Length: 70
Image 1: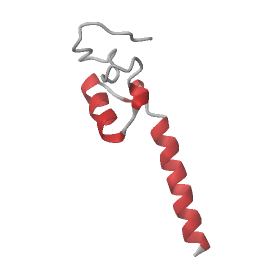
Image 2: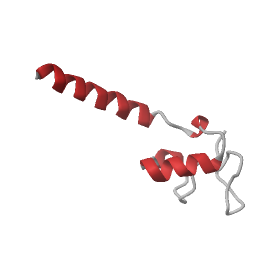
Image 3: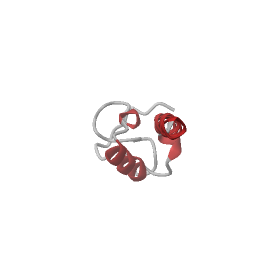
């Protein structure tokens, strides 16, 4: 039983660490990043807090401006 609990704990920690490593570099387009951010609650993809993920990526900002840092 202890082994099962340990295995579950380790797999949860591993998944959590992976989720935090997701960045704009993980996606090819802004649309992909947006979809991921909305489905997985990944606010780190929205650097300026306007609700748009990874505006520097192809597909860019619907607002016509961006505060991307490269």
